[in-house]
Length: 357
Image (cartoon, rainbow, N blue to C red; front, side, top):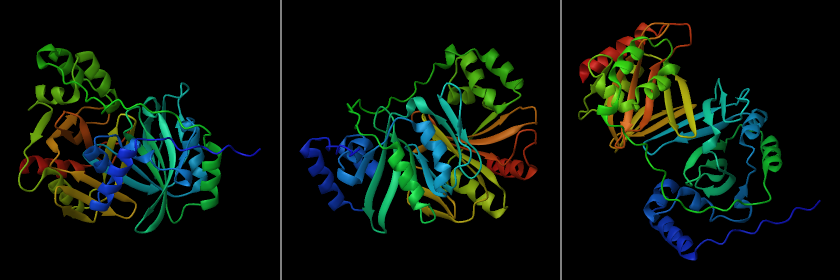
């Protein structure tokens, strides 16, 4: 049966003209920055594309991620306002829970997905300096990008096209701008049950139980660290050499593998391994390694903490970064697996970082 052509959505012409003018004036500016400057969501700019440049996808996001194993290597990108996390690898055995609300993959592609924040999906084709670039892009109800999956040189092109054809939608969902996603509210420290917090913290057996503890105590993550300062948490002092620079240099120089977690409400993306190629570019500190890139705007990261939590495997140490709104934007652990204590090498780097602050 012949497909009905999807007519492009008519967006305000003034936005198209303003975007084109901005692209001409700032050809290297990222689309997320352009959206901020134009006062719209990133998805509103993406939806200005028409024809083969933009293909809407069905809402079957879990099934789509399961099917991605067939296409071979891809580059996945997850970000928040402060940190960008890029990993190249192959999806293996993506699974979702019975309710379909959550999903995960482990291995080269290591993600935890929260589908209630996945509202729109598109295949995007765009001309860049290196040629034609194709990606699958997913957005939340506010039009903010949740996750992106890029076709790379080693991707199976035929399998990629079959996947796009299978999940292509004949309808483009309408979008009504809601402004920016509101930042989570910080709680009043006076309202936190500090006894529940302290006792629960001492009795933690698994870092995955931490969220439930915060809920019982009525605390957000940053407020909990502030209340337990000196017991289980140390705020790291920012100096001319930023905390992230010092941490990455320690990991590189001592060949210490680590786990880097970056997320937004819809997904957490993880890389585990060593870092080698570090580069500072203005406000951004970068890891530029084969298979893993990290880009962090350290001017926008306002607070850094070193955190220790008990577990059945001993103390688990993390370095955690927060933005101006108190949102967690980056977490670094030592490489470890359940049932195995964290490495002494990682503990040494964490202790050195703490002593330097």
